[in-house]
Length: 205
Image 1 (cartoon, rainbow, N blue to C red):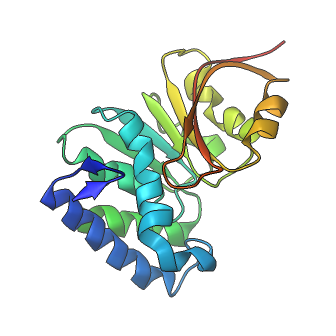
Image 2 (cartoon, rainbow, N blue to C red):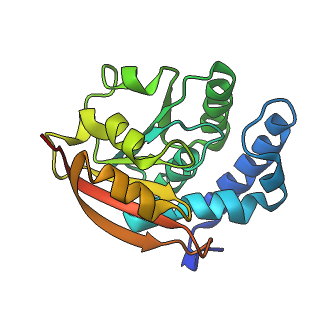
Image 3 (spheres, rainbow, N blue to C red):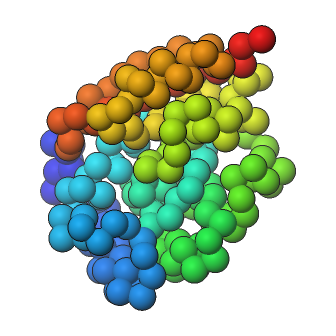
């Protein structure tokens, strides 16, 4: 099959399909995504999340902040199985969602670990990474604060952050407190959305 125009193996397709079925079962009991988006789960959430890994499809160590229903963290962890390398640290403080994420990793064989802690506490457990992801979590200024423990002394670490139509205003606000290199990737799924690729993060004096 193809995901955003990129071929994936039959095994990956099976893992993604298994995750979709698991998600739909759990979503009946706990709120994993906005109810209005459940009907188009594959496109709005699975394919949308896959864009993150597809921007940097290498065997790297990821931190996924506020993993919630598994987007994009579980999708990245599943796609890493094709490389048989790399790892995703999923950070989710909600215990019910963390249980869902652990079940998803177990049932799909995806490459990841769940950390059921607040984001502010996660750097004590996860000391380093290559990439950070987040989707539908917070405004850009808050996200950069979350990312800072892993990025401010490591200019090579990259954050891939999903943003909607107000992204330009968020960038302008964040620029008052932070200096960073930025690449804007247009979403292949939503016309008014982008993925912000950020590196060389430094706090302004």
